Image 1 (cartoon, one colour):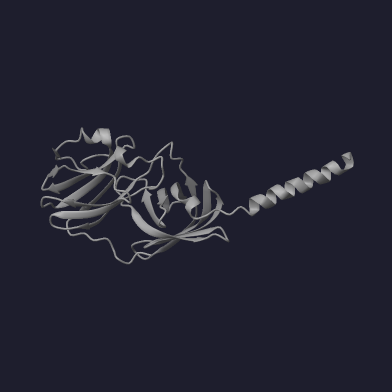
Image 2 (tube, rainbow, N blue to C red):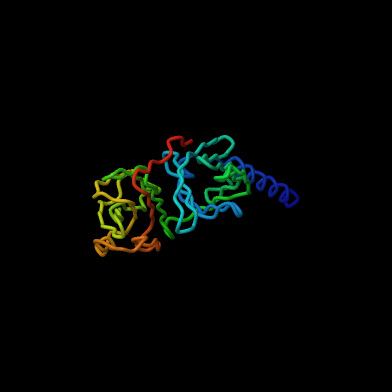
Length: 242
């Protein structure tokens, strides 16, 4: 019997490897929040929502989130994310890691490429939000807050949307209700030149100043303020998204 033990161990090892190689993850399994790094081209975060929308946001204070779409091939365990100015083609290594190639076209129409990876960020360590203003008018604005909606760890009532329309050097607070189910919201505002949108905690919302001359009106700190976007009046997001 002992002489067959090595053979048995080899067979068990092959079965284990084979099972791992045959592991198929569904599209819903890879929805979530990720740290996204692509060499010198990008360093920030990505949110993959259940409706296949994907946002990326550089880890700087002066950047806007960019929305795109996810294409998924379960048989090949491949993901393809299309943004207006970039593309990520990757392979699912595990539910915590997706590796691939990131292609980016700069504003000067210069093409760049780099290896890249998406590393999952646990919800218990940090819940991510990406704010995006999609349309601004004379006395109103529309926007969307991207997050891993549908996840039971996110209690929408614990977060509020704070809008600061700015006229001249003064911004005036317009506090919205808790996060909408899918993140979309509208705000009726006094006439403004520029508007800022923030995601804040419910408790911190009670402490917000009614008006301020600071710009930004608030700073994202990951504790009380979780996301920000800003746009001038009469802005509209480009219509030709993937």
